Image (cartoon, rainbow, N blue to C red; front, side, top):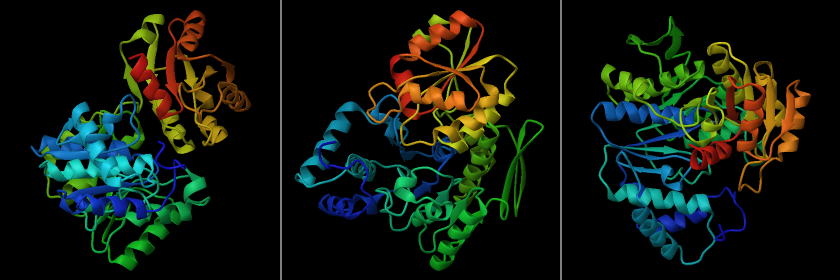
Length: 411
């Protein structure tokens, strides 16, 4: 964190220079699937990985941020990077950088690319950290496919304050002649993506034009120009996961895989902190009769999908423990979930200097019509809820950083 004064500094010069000093490992990767978007990137890549592994293939995976441990970001041919291997590869990158300025995300991304270049795998799945055009992952000249998941408002201070500008940044991952799988988009986002693809000659597979995915009688119905598939529903909860599954299936079809891979993608996928049911841990011991859930969605679009997921659950009084970062649209987050929450306990996120104070979170919740108060931490919040409603549904939500804290310290 001391290598560069800014956490975010969106240029690629430092990354290209370090990659060159390390022998350009980005040119020695297995076929790359590169994903950008605002929502659903991680879930979509997790489904693609599950599908590839279900077909007997191996995949490197690079995602961010991590939840409990940094090692979650780097999965080498199916296994999380070990502590000794991580130290070794980071030291090598640190030495090669020779004290020059570089951001935390840039040097750790280079480390992931370096280790992926040295271990055999069938595919390499890369998730952008922020944006796309100037993201540190955007250094592969000709990936096997690119993906853009749904785009909405997030990180406006870096990407622009309109959907079109944000889409322009995300569309920066498109490459000349490389097929791109495009999930459902707002019209102005899709127009920007299509213009960029047209300029590059990048073929598009667009949801609603070339393929469809929806829920029907609890099943996943997928249709494109050559097939109609009736598949099991995704094990990840929420209507949006049917859309993410469609994106994953379209990608797997493009790569030449069949129905066994599609079923594995939806049935074998694991992705923590996305409406994850918690079943053990110290927090649950404080309220043994309660039902616990964890979700790390952090923007208004995520809150809308969270509200939809809550509507699918059996009726039960729901109490929220919520912590957000101070860069987020708090009012926009509260609006969709207000009707589903009996109360909300605002908490500050442990160890995060950019946390929104719990008092501010509670104030925004109250303005949205939720009965809200402040707790010092998740433990106190659970005790407050359990004393009032022992059989409550307790949802810890608002930020992946809060979700990571819960998984690291309490699960």
